[in-house]
Length: 208
Image: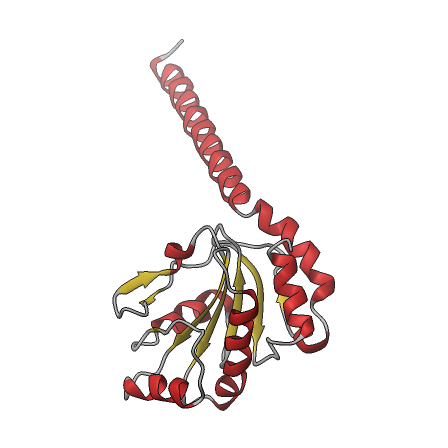
């Protein structure tokens, strides 16, 4: 065998080795990625027929995926992230005092938290007012909305992060997320969250 032939054989063997390694890496990553949200996929199918009535606008995820690890401030004013809520189902809702539809649904979200809030479910309402930080708190107090924890992102980056992956445009936005951090459903716009249809949807997500 000539030197050139030996080199060709060696290069071919190296290429096969690299391709084989890449395929194995892709396979492992693909399986891991799918398995993370496999339970969410099954759960989403149970929710699909419940997106009706007051929550007919809810878009149940066809292929649930992990959401970005949204960053915001907790009720104590300290930074926290969405991953801090792993282990419980959460309804993430973005709202602001300049958003009239947001304000309209806040009492219902407060009532939903009062009715279903527990160690395995929370309404995670995140305020994104970028000016006058005391205004949202005063509005909540004036409306006697007391069961929702006060979460806030004064930079409104959470909206941009969600917009980047979900292509949403307006407010309010609500995302139903499973205990593994996978999206189950999305709603663009307000809903009657305290109604029977919403409670049935959330209850199914909780397996109740």
